[in-house]
Each structure stands twice: as structure tokens, then as C-alpha cells.
Length: 234
Ligand code: MN
Image (cartoon, rainbow, N blue to C red; front, side, top):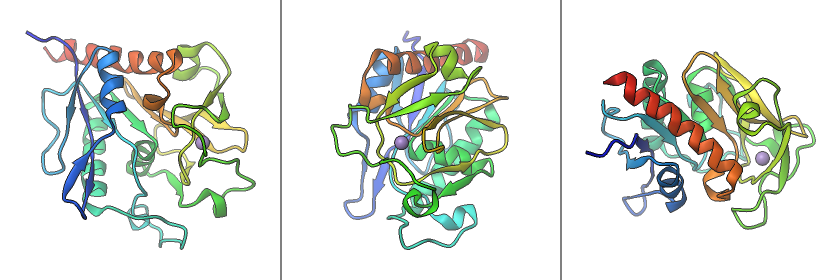
């Protein structure tokens, strides 16, 4: 019997092609860390047998869902994906299911806990860095400062590292229960973690695309939490 932790991953949905899609890097990162990836679909509830959830990257979230009218810079939105990811995220937090939010996924976590979002950092943040890199996805282009005492600090035992950056939005204020675990030098939030959950980490970058030893440690910590959840569930 397979005893690997089972990790649900949310895919994107295209209204145009009627197809689900998920970059292979998400699946690869979970497999390399010793998990069994399972692609979730929008009409299901969170299966009982899951040991962790990855909210994957993607487009913008409908600003109406966080109580704002859309700015002209706001991008394409996906009502189906918004509805199911917000629901799954809420449910995962309630169940204390290990949760990793990547890019858009971090913003989903922040919205369900009442945090704020910059719809476009180019117009809403003061003197932002370049956060939409023009470089291979795997390559880190800006540094982040890691908060002392955070989960990231304990994983990496360092105060600073370099990450890739493929976003025009960011969290402005952390949601209830979340603390800021990393910022870029322009002050923008690059990672959040929940203080009351077993493991609920949101990162603004794409660790699955970087495939470095450092990002491997991040996925390994997520899988350890998922394995502990699996043991407790039995
Ligand atoms: Mn960035």
C-alpha cells in the first residue's frame, strides 16, 4: 500500500478551451519531495483522504471578492476558479490541513482571512521593484528579506535569499492569523505564514519552477507536515 502523503493541487480552468491545466513543475516538486500529487477539480469538496493542498499560481482574483471595484490594470478573471479555490482554502484552514499557496494561491489565502490585495503594484505600491521578470522562470531576479523567527528562517537558516518574480499583484495587509515571513526590498510582502495552523505558508514566488536545493527544503517541510497530518488522521 502506498503510504506517501496525498497532495491535492488546484489546476487552472480555461473557459475558452474548456480544459483544465497545471504546469508539470507543481507535480514534479511534490513527487520529488515524496508526495503523491492529485489534481483537484472545481465541483468536488475537499476529499477526506488528502494530506495537504497546493493552491497553484494563475491569474488575478475578482476584486469584488475582496470588496473592491476593479482598477483598469486588473487582469483577466476566472469566476469558476475563484469560487472553488476560496472554498477549498477556507475548508483546508478549518481542517488544519497543510496548505501551500503559490503566487495567486498566497493571495487566495490572504483573501479568505480578510487580508488586503494590491490589484496592481505598479500603480498602488510606492516605488516597486521589477516583479514581472524577463528571464527564465527558474531564475531568481530579486532578493527577499526573511523575518526572524519565521518558518522560512528556520528552514533556511539565513536572512536573505533570491527568488523568481512573476506577479503584478501582491498582498498589502496580511489576513487574520497570518504574519509576514518575507518582504522584498521595496517593502512588498513576498511570503506569509499562519501562526495557528500546522502548516499554512503562502509564497509570492514560484518555488516549483526554481528547482533549487533551497526550494526543495520548502517542499520537504510541507511534506513533513502532510505526513504528520496523515499519521494523526489514522
Ligand atoms: Mn516579487
